[in-house]
Length: 153
Ligand code: ZN
Image (cartoon, helix red, strand yellow):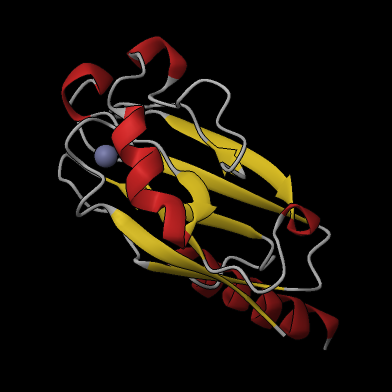
């Protein structure tokens, strides 16, 4: 009996692994990027019960970060354009993050094909009543490579 239950639990785990969305812990999310100007999802939501949220950006493409680099930057939706424009004058070494920009809640470094980076932040860093969005600040990407970040519950 126990074996049968274990086998069923294992099947469930395998199924969960096969899907991006159902990766067990809702406070740990993964976003994939490729050799194109797009995130694998344009909407991310996490439960308000998460004390911390970890976002992993995974580049499953082939191109180097100098040609098709991507990052994941969480910021207030209303400030997205202004910050993204400022980011274009930042350097690759600083992952195209404007120096001293304190409106940015969290960001990963710029990564290329085969790389990944994880950023962990607290939901208490978000301001109540503010809409948040995420964007890639690699030059030329921000106008299309973006998504909506919401906290549910
Ligand atoms: Zn990008």
